[in-house]
Image (cartoon, rainbow, N blue to C red; front, side, top):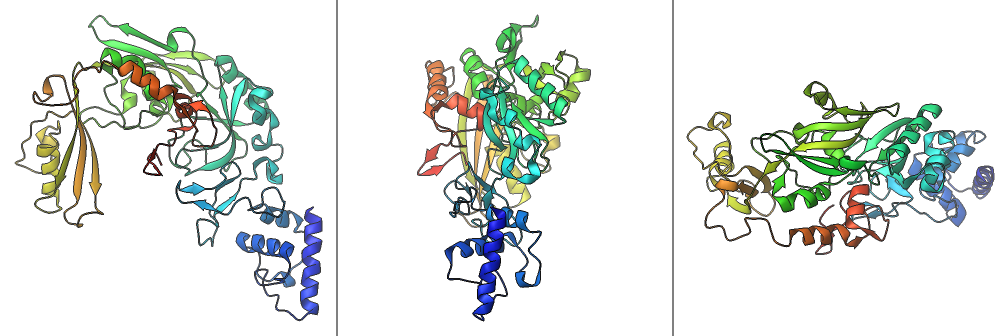
Length: 470
């Protein structure tokens, strides 16, 4: 117990005094004992007072327990945390540990501390320790419990319970429970947002809902419709990834007007955030939503179909309610040319040369009035471009630039050697991608790639021994 640990520490300190040893800090006191070394190591890491002989220990049992638990999560005398995984750029043992910097940590290892969560006395009677939330589908709610929320890049690892309800009633019951207990609900997509956009983990009355397991009713799971002008719309489950959507529309030659680099992003997260696309003349992805099916805080379902209301729900960060379904405006591309442009700054690294590459070599579809350098002339055939600049392998004043570009329909090059139309095996390839068995980034095993992408972002993709999605 904490009291016993406190007594042991006091006894060892008395022994040190009797032996006339220097006990100025816990870091160098009583080196001969393994158990007290554990106390010393934990105390030093936690930044405790460096002169324990001059302060009372009578009110510090909770502190002793807390500092022990920084690295030894189950109090068995063996550190569970305190190691950084450099291959995956995160703390090892993610189930129990997370990156929690505290001054004056000098290494990444020191910042890998235990996630106390429900074990922390400060979290008792809060959402963090609520067993009804942590039991998930085994308990009060028909929802998959996915551990504690953390985002895909491990910028934020929290103690907030992460639940994935399966239908409207499941979401509604969680909202009702939150209201009854004074909890706050935050909504996550696949976890690709940086920082604390979903939650920063500071408020222990917060839990997180994801649509990763959600199945929408009838046409809102997926359906396509035609407008009088011949254009197409697609209604889709907001919990789907872009890969799920494109599995349905790409074989028919349709696209969302703007697209991101990641086909593993959740559609609801894309619309509820300011997610850009690589298109020169198109807007954010949420600009192409024409209708939404949403649930408000009190469990009511609403259809948002006027621009007056849609403009508030786009990029709303979950603050107005939960986006359950999205209707997208679609664009037909019978031909699509995807290609790379590799270039160097022949005339040095400067504004004129930078814009010359964008306009002339990358063929960006940009009107002259938005280009700040006069006298440039390009074909404007590329509707989309992603730019990657290499400052490392080349000299700083002559960096390499790679552009991943796309042309569509009448703009494609007649002599292009690659695929232009709809690949014959595209449906099979999407199915192979979505159905292959993987391990998720949070360590959950034996699920399909499609499930892992919806639950917590892109699964690890190993290229040359390194996770290309990290």
